[in-house]
Amino acid sequence: MILHCAETPVRDIFAGGSAKRHSVQSALMPRFLDWMMEAVFFDKQKSSRPANPADDALDAPTTGLRERSGTRDDAKEMSLYNKVAMHPLLTGAAVVGAGLAVAALVAGGRSNGRRG
Image (tube, rainbow, N blue to C red; front, side, top):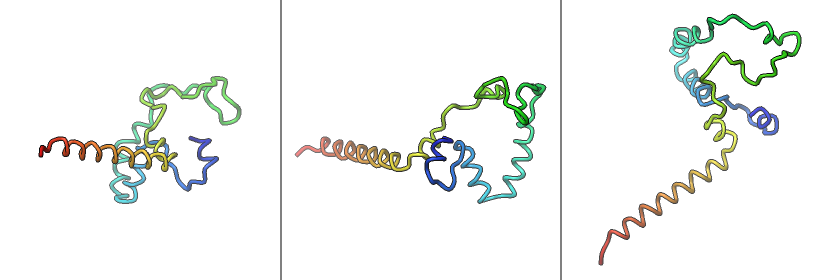
């Protein structure tokens, strides 16, 4: 996704569907979203595990060489939202093609059901 953003002139891209959802919610109801974030998400950012000094990359590279921090088990490798957002023309063509296929199936089913 980072490479795509570097190569493609897109103003905004969100990391996952939930980020896009939060952006829309923030535009529509900012005070409610602020309340919800404070009530729910603030505690989610905390961990009962102590910090690992080997993961501190502020002044020098870490020695762990890991892609993921290991602090979350629910992180996803791929987001369908990001695939769609990065390839809107291909997605649009696929949606139109699927719509035409459904229309052809519906029309074919109606003509097969008639007897003359």
